[in-house]
Length: 192
Image (cartoon, rainbow, N blue to C red; front, side, top):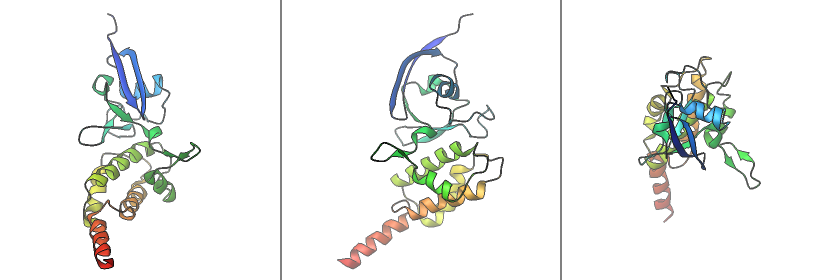
């Protein structure tokens, strides 16, 4: 029996990839690690349960997290994808600069073995980007963080620091909570 192939193309971390003839049953984590040398996406459970392999897929309604170990490339064909390698920004010299989420994780030492960290960073990044489009009241931040990170498993039990780091990013970044918008509007009205 011959291996069925598909012509695969996507945008990964802002770069066009493909077309490439690949086995149609290839999982995203295999594409990333074996064909593209993007090894930051971690394969752990292989069942989509632990979320260490979380990648970000862009969609009409914004970004969403997807477990790369059970997501076939057929579904990703033609889409825009971000991996942990695509989260950091660049400074004027082209050197990597940690994103706000990555920096907060470093400052809170929000990891131990760090194997699950890419999944947590990607899930946190999606939450922050979602809040940029639709801020929430500060009182709802804890619940939203729990909802966003709940599927991710840390075997070293580093949850508290991941959650604290993400909470700090959200509460200290203007515009992610509606309380910020109200406070800014009040300050502007007072100055007028």
